[in-house]
Length: 183
Image (cartoon, rainbow, N blue to C red; front, top):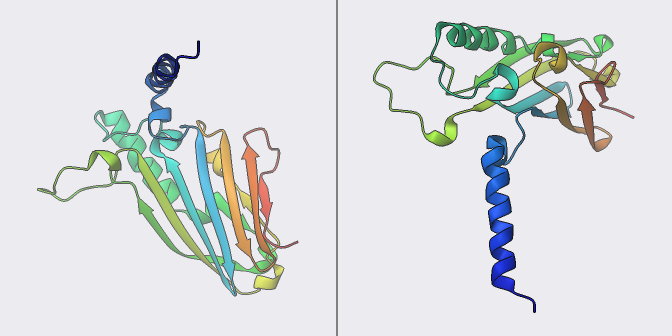
């Protein structure tokens, strides 16, 4: 006889076991993955990088030890240099004009600031804007995230450009990770 209640109970127990065994599953995403969104509009190239802080740093909490504090400061300095992480075609003449980092767990906080919301722990977002003198020559963008972050294994890239939209999955084993912007 088919016992729906028992089967649902077994399924829930298995799911709880999976989530307990993999803390990343509890947050809905693996810790070795980064998402990159690229958009090209006239002479402006915008890039958004989203990743669990653990993918980039090795931990997703407020730094506690001196070593963790140094690692967090180094990461913030590194990701502020978006032109070292993303390489637009040189012929396009793109220059990084803005970089904004949001990583509440590791960014300096004002004295007396309210405590972090638990959902903000482990959050990392970076936005970069490049101005391109010759946007019609922008054909591809080199993605240097694997060189920068040893824990990162996969980068999902979505591109919205003059020729439409595309999606690319880059793996660490990719010899020269780049994505096309134009066909």
